[in-house]
Image (tube, rainbow, N blue to C red; front, side, top):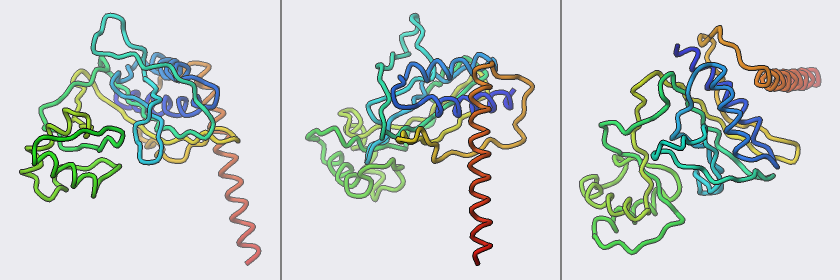
Length: 246
């Protein structure tokens, strides 16, 4: 069951990365991910989003949902439509579940936060001003954990006001209690030559399943595999030529 979920999540990540190209919309990507999920009989985690990335901004304005929100579910928010453009960067983030796909807050206390550089507010509490000053100095752009702060006790008092006014974004621990979860990520660049995947790990070989993707998904996966094989052959040939010259 976990193997099937892992294969589905990985293939959905590959298809989503290939679908993010200049001129296409976030709706196109959502439909592609949903198609893969249905073929494998798993459910996308509704709270997971893919984001545009910019310098100092991990979660940009443009977002991609893994699934369309259900009309009768007030917890799910509709992601604004957007069109991808050349010279943009996106974090492709795909999580699949064998359950209902709804991640809920766990019992663990939130300890990871990130500075929201686009938000400003004059804080009232001294402890809040102190923790924000330290964050601005030491962690101005990337997420941090509470234990990295100099005075954790004081930070616990001041962190709430920072979060309430949008100065810090919390990263809570979420749990999917109804099934097993698989999660894969990568980064893509929208270049003039096309979309290029620059980060992301391969799926471990021990994840195998008899379930097969739909015809359209299989076609995209075959094209990706062929392109990677050509790239690997070209790299090997280049390396061989360098050795000959030596």
